Image (cartoon, rainbow, N blue to C red; front, side, top):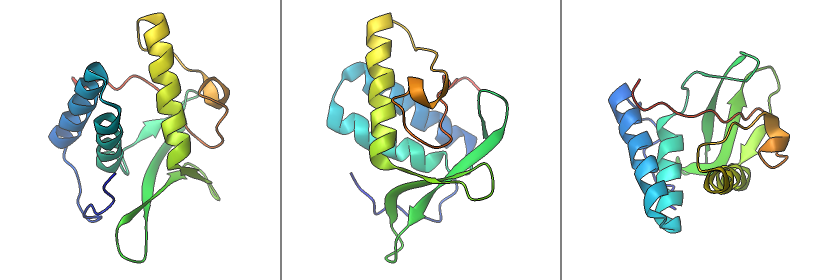
Length: 133
């Protein structure tokens, strides 16, 4: 996974749509290494994007940057004061759990809360990303 992305880039709506479409395409092809790299690029594109928890509370995230200016494997969730970070391994665990559930159910599953996502900690809700918006 490349972590040498330019940390100062801001992504447009079209670039975000392109990232989601690329991720959806990779999910269909099933190449795990490319899928993980595409997920990483999608996470980069959606930094500071407004999301909402299932109960309607707003949040966003940023990726931590290291001393060298490159991204590390840590997301900082911005929902409330003293919010915790979320590790890349937790993101991958959630993503893999959702893909597994999708395969079993034949559709994108509704995941209610952190425990249904694999008992990770922090503010992390999965909702279907509508690439038509």
